[in-house]
Amino acid sequence: MSLKTVDVAEARTLLQRGDVVAIPTETVYGLGGWIHSESGLRKIFSIKERPFFDPLIVHVASPASARSLAKEWTEVHEALARTCWPGPLTLIAPKTSEINPLITSGLDSVGLRCPRHAVALQLLSGIEGGIAAPSANKFGKTSPTTSAHVYAEFGAGVSILEGGPSEIGIESTVAGVVGNRVEIYRPGFYTASMLRKLLAEQGVMVDVVYAVSPVAPGQLKHHYMPKIPLVIVPEGFSWKQDPLLVSVPFRNPVLWQQPASAAVASRELYQKMREFDAAGFDIIFAERRPEHDAEEWGGIWNRLEKAKTQNLV
Ligand code: TXA
Ligand code: MG
Image (cartoon, rainbow, N blue to C red; front, side):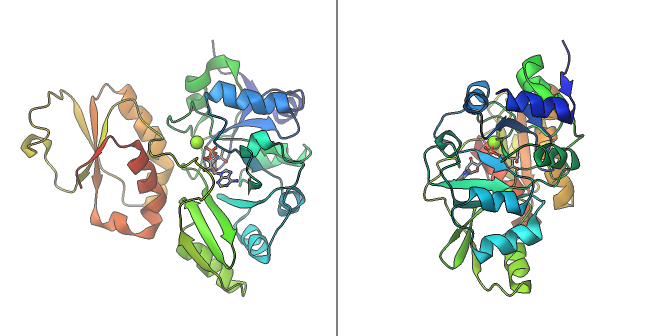
């Protein structure tokens, strides 16, 4: 058996007929279903083994499509969409009744995102409404950044629209607008400082903060997990000298040191987890260096924190 790839026209037909298709984006590959097909939406949850309480993101072709699915779209939404889309930012907005409650887990808000990927945009511009798509992996497992990862996860049962390796490599920043404040519920490429600056440049003076979503239980503690244990360690760490670990019979540990550039680290993150799994190591020691406290590393360490088994930092 091998990868079942489809072109944009075939992908559209499959979606409209109530099937799912794996779609490329600049962050990670998504498992897409058409927002107007209940059958497609149900398949997303069953194929991913995802609980219904975790809401999906709706991908749209443009800010105009997003506006048409939102009941309220503030000047803050508009300013963020104008500067960050197409791109790795998901905006939460109150939803219209056109949005199936399956997508939002019954919440009255919906996550909307216009991805910066030519193939995805081509598909989206030819389909009415939008495409609901969570990352194309089994629930709680490592997100896919290539079509081969999607195939490894689901086999030939899921058709894939090929789009090359994902450029950003970690999921979008998820942000909501609460009164006169932007709240980031999931860190990603766009940091609070970046959004604050982009908004100020457009004359929109609002604060941007990191927060825990009051409604979406999607931010589970463990997520993105490789198959072998991942332990976060400080720079210069030696497991042979650690009283906790010296008696544990690891045969084949690997020390994971991030590259100097956060952009490169982000692009490679999930690929590396998969490589370590496949290479026969039995534990990953992920080194956290002081420079990782910088905001641009926030999305990367958020994923590593969720993937970890233990933290020795
Ligand atoms: O980059 C991405 O966002 C990728 C690609 C495929 O676009 N998608 C993705 O989807 O990461 P998923 O389902 O793995 O993560 C979506 C998260 C949910 O777990 C939830 O935390 C948040 O987005 N979310 C969705 N709808 C929400 C809502 N109405 N309110 C608050 N958070 C919401
Ligand atoms: Mg996911």
